Image (cartoon, rainbow, N blue to C red; front, side, top):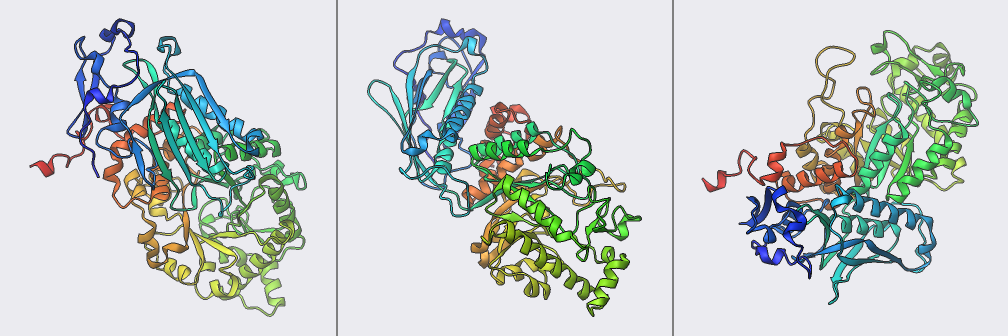
Length: 607
């Protein structure tokens, strides 16, 4: 329900003391804002109206919106009173109940939150002194010591902000665990703004929010094999994910192009497979990234893609087929080709060592085994593979090579279970020929496998997967492959999945439209960046703010289309930039400052 336009005077009950005009030099400012008929309208400032002027962030927080500028929009009741208090940033206190307060994790989350507040201030030299104390009380159960994020983790929270008669502002966050409380802190940070008119940090004085995600799996995939990304770039992505409550970083760490992961048991893989000795993710680095993600409420899940998508690093093992075979288009979807030879002696011992070190590094609650784009022509080009199949009494038809694939998956899974101590860790596989009839029934158990859908949202095979009871993760390339749109790199024209996918399509990519009556089998979704034509220098503006559109789809599952979110997203994009992300510009800045004046149909209803 829309709110009536708020009186300017009410919005400006900012503090008990009015800041003198001279101290803020109104003559240096040209514009302020006021709420008119549900829209924030820019007004020229003068000595007469300066004391009643509203900054854009404050205006947008309250004007004609029950959720203000929050992103993603909360799923429960929201109350935001139209009163702001100046915050004395030198008097912000954190109180954490329970044994969890002793955890370093909480201190790291507190420091990050204070850094976000600091990022709102463009220049501390002109910051107005004074304000009120802000106390943040975080309540979790006594036994809720922080643990790792799983599919069973309760990420809900409640946030209540009250102000006592002295002006002291108290924010209370209640959650079942660290991860829910962290989300509450994220929401609280969005209720704190910098008022560039008064040059002070302000917080909503009274508010209450109850919130929980609609989907458990809310992720981004980054391919670090085709092009290497620095640790700084990966951490920046995790920062962005935390801002919008995404919770899974799917690390496609290796592929046929490079093997940049340090493995102590099999050092030849990364020594031969990395682009250079400097472009390797050491075990210490990986541990740092995993913990960095945990502080931000993000699980870092590794993928070891097999049996296809292997090559560099495996040169001397005699365990691959069609490595760098030419012409490559006869053996794989892009160069360099390479697949594991499921019949090679010692292969599964090597895989067990790889899995074991990944378990030590990531302690995954879910593991991704890849499994896409296997080429039967690649295996068929190998004399040893063909001979092994004949020795088993098999033929050399497509069904026989699918049987070979099923054999590989079965044997590889046995090695996963060994290193996971028989814990039956859920396994993710990509959609492929193996997930089609009749092979899906022969080789894959819906109690064990989760299927990640990368084909189109209208792929008829998806329904057949869901009908069999498989849990799914949606990454349909026609809406969630964020590397689409660009020049071809193995030919002229555009790349294979062009055109560029706008944030609007990402936002409207409904899980119910894809899964129909089986939406309850959908764990969530991931947006992907495959890095053939992207590296760390272009990463941010490919992910952001389109990944934010996905975040709201998965957290809130809004019934409305992208249009209701557009003006909020413009401000949210400014928040991403404020926190160090090179997010793509969506519109001219004029559109941000002149709400609802840019959409082509903005005035159609009034005609």
